[in-house]
Length: 384
Image: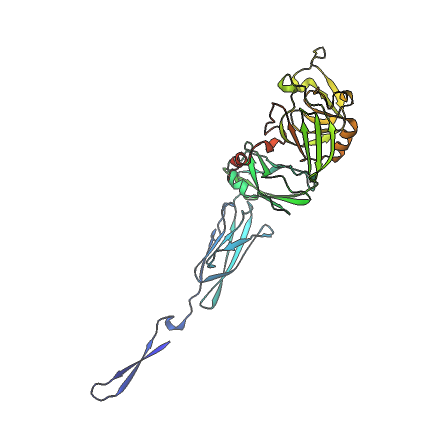
């Protein structure tokens, strides 16, 4: 831009015009955008758990592309498009290339960088995921992830565990020790939907010098809602399917007299089922056949509800007691016809609520996680 300055001569009245260069680009040249990329070009041994950061000190960022290990890394811009950060961890021992464009004063520049992530001294993996792939589960089923090594950076690992469902639900992870994380919803899952778990462990720093190298994904189907109520005092069991009473039957629960013969009270989730199952007193420490407390029974249609040996199963030998008195060693004895029906119906994660005894189910006994209040459950999350 030019400015005309007009000066009038004092004596003659002549007009003199002076042309001056205005503020702006000296010589009319446009200034290129300045872009920096972290990690720097040529860097080796970069930590995969730290983000890639692209910053424009002048101008505005356009496209940012990151490629490595045969995949593209996603990221997000800030509101002014002056900075871009990758949104997930990187794979260890992998070469990455970063290409960014930026525009300033109408001029677009392109900046590139390449770097290598470190090779970890140790790695960890997901050793097991429960449920199984595409398994149809009950409304009370927890998601259980077990790790191959102790996890000390539990918050970082927990951030990389993602659960989504067709019907949104509030849920949280709870750590049991250093190698097991369990996901439970605040309320039961809503039935008839799909749940997805992704564990983006590649590049996550689980402990000092210890990184994950692989991602995992699994999906499950929530089936009908199966919620059963076992009333030990009334000797009755009632089963509801999707909120409607489907069947009720007389039962006989633990005879009591000692803790080991008392059915656990509280909210159980079905762990599995088997037919037949041989039940012995060995789990109680009684192995001598001459001991009056010794027993060995083969039972059928056995639906497991705890890891301390409790099942809902067929018990034709106690039909006379069912509905009237409790005579079992802790299991829920049921009439054969009802037990056969319940066995066919049951799947992992179905809820069996037991009431009327003085022995509370421990939260770590089987899938006893529903015994914890939501407040107490959240205390076990590394992210609270």
